[in-house]
Image (cartoon, rainbow, N blue to C red; front, top):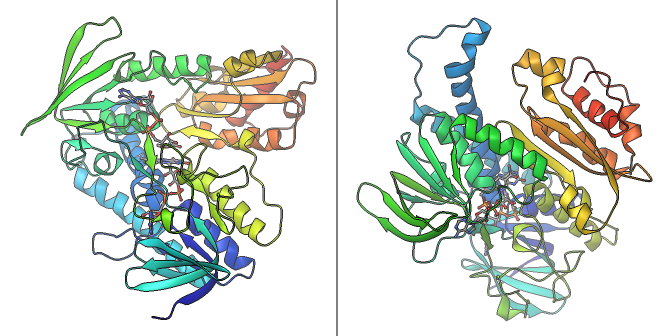
Amino acid sequence: MSSKQFDVVVIGGGPGGYIAAIRAAQLGFNTACIDEWKNAAGGPALGGTCTNVGCIPSKALLQSSEHYEQAAHHFADHGIGLKDLSIDVETMLGRKDTVVKQNNDGILYLFKKNKVSFFHGRGAFSKAVDGGFEITVGDQTVQGRQIIVATGSSARALPGVPFDETQVLSNDGALRVGAVPKKLGLIGAGVIGLEMGSVWRRLGAEVTVLEGLPTFLGAVDEQIAKEAHKAFTKQGLKIELGVKVGDIKVGKKGVSVAYSGADGEAKKLDVDKLIVSIGRVPNTEGLNVEAVGLKLDERGAVVVDENCRTSVSGIWAVGDVVRGPMLAHKAEEEGVAVAERIAGQHGHVNFNTVPWVIYTSPEIAWVGETEKQLKARDVKYKVGTFPFMANGRARALGDTTGMVKFIADATSDEILGVHIVGPMASELIAEAVVAMEFKASSEDIARICHAHPSLSEATKEAALAVDKRTLNF
Ligand code: FAD
Ligand code: NAI
């Protein structure tokens, strides 16, 4: 059997893999990408978790459910009357599927445009060959001088409670619930728990989230997390912290979760559906890493250095399958950096300026360090905050929850972190990322002209607040 030869072979067509393949092709390498994801018809569905069961479909449902929430509770404030408001879940899911397909097809088009060869199927290492590696894809083999592993991650199940995607749902099933459940339970108040909980709560489900840790959103700046917790609770999301989940019984009609509360009291939660969102595990099963001696850590993640080099020269790994935050944009940046390194360039990812966004309402977004992290490092800092309540555009939008918070070095005034909870935080954070990449001070932002009326004025005002001279508060 003859092998097809490539300069670069990427295993995995999620944001880490497909972007790495495109960048490698742009740099003049003969590139192939292998991806096994199938759409409902069995055809290819490029884009990985992000496009198929992650970032894109979740944001489509967040948008639909937010429209519903606005229509149900806020249109009246604008003098808009609605009779017989209803939600057709099938249409909502259909729209989401269309958005996903547009993205799948978009990546196939990009592969054609950039002359990336695509192989649909599971890739597995077969052996090291002279000047590269051989990989099997079904009954074909391909060889690459350089290999990029970008196989992503999958939802972690609770021990003894497998996902059936009907009653016990991973992120996949959570995006395909055919009718609004009366009672929905979630285990894990992390990013997926809050986003998916918000979708189904807005559509009328009674949602309870059980979180193991005693603090809410421990990675988020404390002041921001507190504000978000207040907003979510007011919306009707029930969040129980510090719980210990015990027996889970899956019956014909629902799921029963035995747990103890923070005070140790034994409790039970009966729900129609249960989403388990307790983190994700790297996808390395079936890759046959032993064939080439690729080292994995105790979680099954591919071990890499800061430049995504694995233990085997000529094999790289990026995205969710390696250490670091499981974020699509982090995977993409690593993919680009690796392709550039293969080309002898100096691709680099600045982990200190990777933004985080939680697409709830209010949105939560941040970049850089929290007060807690700075205290732990004994760094002296100044803080400036500005509430959206005092921002004209937020008032006009009717969305005044939250604030922008700047943390700057006490001596140099360099921005160390920006934390936002409020409308369009996902978009506002970009300015902070640029500022931090350019090592800006809070005074730099405070002296930049921002359009009026805009939410971004709250960013400028928070920067002014570091020097205690807000103009509108
Ligand atoms: P993946 O996207 O997981 O892609 C890996 C691909 O490799 C898959 O197509 C898989 O089928 C394929 N594959 C695996 N093994 C093999 C093999 N042996 N052979 C061939 N193909 C293989 N991140 C954000 O930044 N923003 C968000 O808003 C966001 N929302 C999310 C919402 C949800 C519900 C979830 C679950 C995740 C979300 N994420 C979000 C995280 C984001 O999806 C991941 O960080 C991102 O997809 C990681 O990209 P990746 O390329 O490393 O892996
Ligand atoms: P997560 O790590 O964000 O949250 C998991 C939560 O579950 C944590 O709070 C943890 O303390 C809790 N937990 C763990 N085990 C538990 C147990 N046995 N009982 C009760 N609570 C338990 O993981 P999640 O939400 O599954 O998402 C996975 C990853 O996907 C995220 O870390 C993020 O990187 C990515 N993602 C990103 C999004 C975005 O960028 N907007 C959206 C959704 C996911």
